[in-house]
Length: 130
Image (cartoon, rainbow, N blue to C red; front, side, top):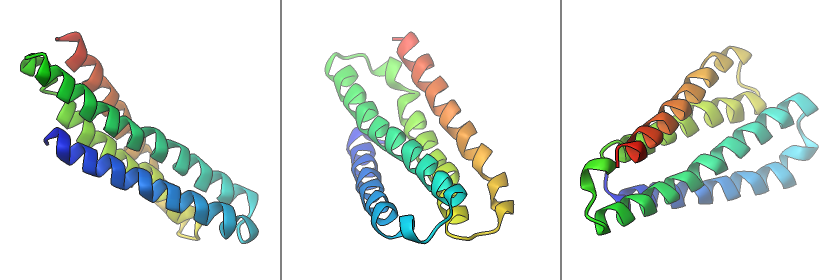
């Protein structure tokens, strides 16, 4: 995955986070109970952290390539994929449960958390090898 593609994903997911945040603040706050709002907010927090992290990853990739250190950046595109998967699974499952999906969907949430952790491990390994 190229830095440009990672930037598109990061910017798109960050924009989606803004939209969902506004949706939550202006519409859901009046319609959901406190548990559902907590799920929604947790999903939104992780969504934002990792969508912004995608943008940072892209900048690191660009910087490493500018410095002619291509071998160390090998895992960073995979970390970006892990962050995207994490947003979809972790945040997505929490959003859906907040909106009324069966609680059974909560079994997917830890898989998204695992994807986030894999992404961070890949970042550490990639940078440590540079």
